[in-house]
Length: 265
Image (cartoon, rainbow, N blue to C red; front, side):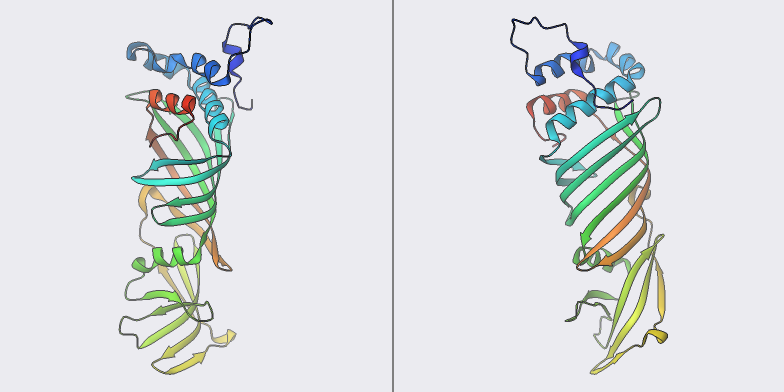
């Protein structure tokens, strides 16, 4: 089965001589059960995961696909253009979210794709969205990645030289190394391309290029960078997250969809 859900199936038939209600009215009527008194809503949510996911997808796709949104994630404000959203499945659901022009906590992403192997809504002790087997793919400016890497590589400062090569400098500025960084499976590999000692600069031939590997520290939420490579002035990357969850205020989310307001802000 493929979403989105058709809310007309939850409405009484409309007489031919009556004007058709607007989509938000139909959807709002169909989702009244979300905000039933807690004694009934919790039980209904527990039994209606598939229906709730369908209605969520329908509402979010109709309201926010192709639009700029702002929402709070992990304590930071995210601004992005929602390219498209899909949730599909029968007993087990997977999801995919495509974003462009993303800004979050000082990071900028030209594109960001989020795929979840499993997505569900759990009702107890309170409604929350649970996703697992998450894969992220995207493209970010090289400067942003260097800013993020620098505090994780002790005793070196990172930047770009006049030839746009990545350079690591010692704090006393006596030694500078031009390197080509690649992140593979949670490790940073730095291949030496040139070095400068005070005023002496030396290019390193291909057959003599040494590689140093630096382990990245543990990242929040079990995030692991599988691969990151330079592509011109940007870096293309792949990462994984085992699982993540977020509380859902169904009433607030429902109002945001009906009013076409950015959710969770």
